[in-house]
Image (tube, rainbow, N blue to C red; front, side, top):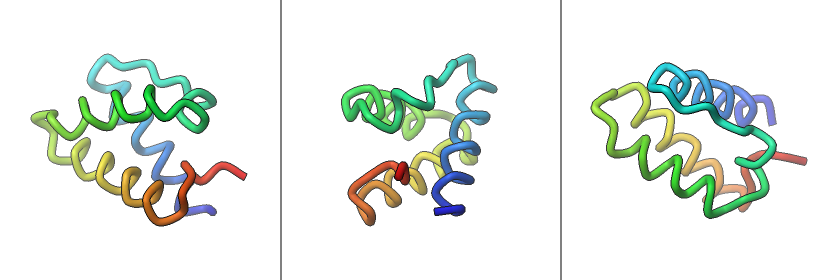
Length: 69
Protein backbone atom coordinates (compact mmCIF):
# COMPACT_ATOMS: atom_id res chain seq x y z
CA UNK A 1 0.00 0.00 0.00
CA UNK A 2 2.79 2.44 0.85
CA UNK A 3 4.55 1.74 -2.47
CA UNK A 4 1.28 2.45 -4.28
CA UNK A 5 0.91 5.80 -2.54
CA UNK A 6 4.50 6.74 -3.31
CA UNK A 7 4.00 5.83 -6.99
CA UNK A 8 0.89 8.00 -7.18
CA UNK A 9 2.54 10.97 -5.48
CA UNK A 10 5.63 10.69 -7.69
CA UNK A 11 3.40 10.61 -10.77
CA UNK A 12 1.40 13.61 -9.56
CA UNK A 13 4.47 15.78 -9.01
CA UNK A 14 6.22 14.74 -12.19
CA UNK A 15 3.06 15.53 -14.15
CA UNK A 16 2.77 18.88 -12.35
CA UNK A 17 6.29 19.68 -13.50
CA UNK A 18 5.02 19.29 -17.06
CA UNK A 19 1.99 21.52 -16.52
CA UNK A 20 -0.64 18.89 -15.67
CA UNK A 21 -2.69 19.41 -12.51
CA UNK A 22 -3.72 15.89 -11.46
CA UNK A 23 -6.95 15.25 -9.56
CA UNK A 24 -5.75 12.40 -7.34
CA UNK A 25 -9.25 11.43 -6.20
CA UNK A 26 -10.40 11.17 -9.81
CA UNK A 27 -7.25 9.29 -10.83
CA UNK A 28 -8.26 6.48 -8.47
CA UNK A 29 -11.85 6.12 -9.67
CA UNK A 30 -12.01 7.24 -13.31
CA UNK A 31 -10.30 4.74 -15.63
CA UNK A 32 -10.66 6.96 -18.72
CA UNK A 33 -9.04 9.91 -16.92
CA UNK A 34 -6.22 7.72 -15.61
CA UNK A 35 -5.65 6.18 -19.05
CA UNK A 36 -5.43 9.62 -20.67
CA UNK A 37 -2.84 10.79 -18.16
CA UNK A 38 -0.75 7.62 -18.34
CA UNK A 39 -0.88 7.72 -22.15
CA UNK A 40 0.35 11.32 -22.20
CA UNK A 41 3.08 10.51 -19.67
CA UNK A 42 4.27 7.48 -21.63
CA UNK A 43 4.74 9.73 -24.69
CA UNK A 44 6.65 12.36 -22.72
CA UNK A 45 10.25 13.31 -23.45
CA UNK A 46 10.96 12.85 -19.73
CA UNK A 47 12.44 9.45 -18.85
CA UNK A 48 11.47 9.98 -15.20
CA UNK A 49 7.85 10.66 -16.12
CA UNK A 50 7.71 7.65 -18.45
CA UNK A 51 9.16 5.44 -15.71
CA UNK A 52 6.67 6.80 -13.18
CA UNK A 53 3.77 6.16 -15.55
CA UNK A 54 4.99 2.61 -16.17
CA UNK A 55 5.16 1.97 -12.41
CA UNK A 56 1.65 3.35 -11.95
CA UNK A 57 0.35 1.24 -14.82
CA UNK A 58 2.04 -1.90 -13.46
CA UNK A 59 0.52 -1.22 -10.06
CA UNK A 60 -2.98 -1.02 -11.56
CA UNK A 61 -2.44 -4.20 -13.60
CA UNK A 62 -1.05 -6.09 -10.60
CA UNK A 63 -3.67 -5.00 -8.08
CA UNK A 64 -6.64 -4.20 -10.27
CA UNK A 65 -6.85 -0.76 -8.63
CA UNK A 66 -4.86 2.40 -8.32
CA UNK A 67 -3.89 1.35 -4.81
CA UNK A 68 -6.87 2.99 -3.16
CA UNK A 69 -8.50 1.09 -0.32
